[in-house]
Length: 226
Image 1: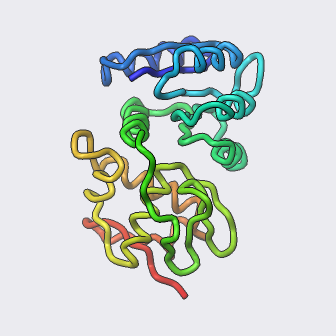
Image 2: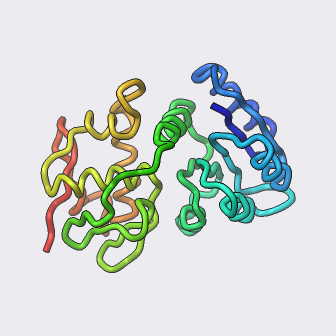
């Protein structure tokens, strides 16, 4: 596993390097402080994962993302202090697989990277699956809900697919965790946060959800609608 971080904050680079040294010591770690250098390293080193900061000194992180996507479909996770929805949507629409808002927790970073890298093979989910007014667009990152296109991360898309495929039946938190992280790394600890993020994007009132419903102590299901 080779990980490239494109980030101009040396303290953040050191922090992330230490996270992987402790939590995933077998991973190789390389870094670039400028966007152009990062693009060159992507071509030269062919990393498995790119952690990309949006605020770079020489060019926009969005432009770096666009250029990388012209020649590779490798996993790209945005890391940013911006939590504005428009920035997140823009990054996902340009092809980012995930995003993390700084400051983020160590275990959260490792969980996101593991969740994405274990799915290097092409996804086999049937995009024709639908659940009332909820369906997929051209990929798992594009969800159509009430005739509105909403961009989600690849992980969020897989969770939604599982819930939609179950057609109103409860999917346990264990099932969701295994889907995301696999048997080796799975933990239900972050399932709730993923559900929260999906609700923030889909629900009219995320605090009082009417689409993705929790069965306390068991899991979640999509409430079927006309």
